[in-house]
Image (cartoon, rainbow, N blue to C red; front, side, top):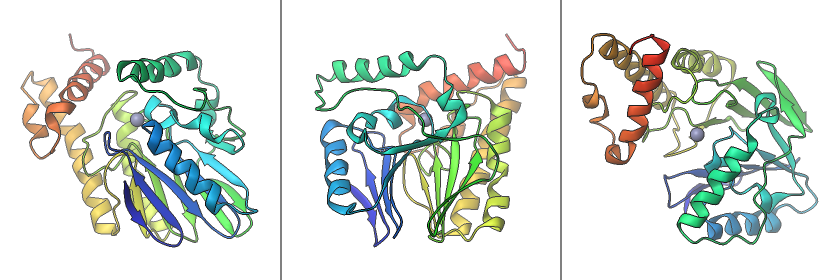
Length: 270
Ligand SMILES: [Zn+2]
């Protein structure tokens, strides 16, 4: 269940949806990102954190509020929580908790920690907001489109880009909020690669990207999907062929249909 590991980072990969969880360590801190998903997987991450932290403070970062990314919060109640201000101010938090409970009941899962919505200690609201902890710098970018409360995080000097549910090698864009905003977020890629020396991009689902070239390819592919989908919808044409290169497309069809419905609303098409 460990996809990648070096002295600074462990990338855990859930059996479900190849969802990633991270533990990043610097001399200043331990940063845990989106700990998920099955009870034993969260427990394993928790054990690693307890073994590794020593005297260092533990921070917990949530990339966005989708239930699969928040499911592990209750196992890290002592940590300082970082997330967007939009996530902090979210109105229908109960809905997310219900989705977690629904999932656990569906598969008869028990967790030895409470299911809670994370209270945000450090709220990110500005573009390129900087959080300095000792010699560790976290720079945040708004990443609207998938959801309204998504953020990108860049960790320096490690050069790690935490992308949340963008720039996956396994998923076309899942657009829950806005296709225009989604495009804007993708178009930040070049600026981010100019502003920071990135060694590794980690998506919320799928595999890490270790070269600029790979990141650019993912960006282009996502942009192409959105733009072609929009134009196919405008001319009432079928768009299922846009999924042909995606390995798990049968399971992703519902998300594609969701994108169609959302873009139709955006375009005022029946
Ligand atoms: Zn998501």
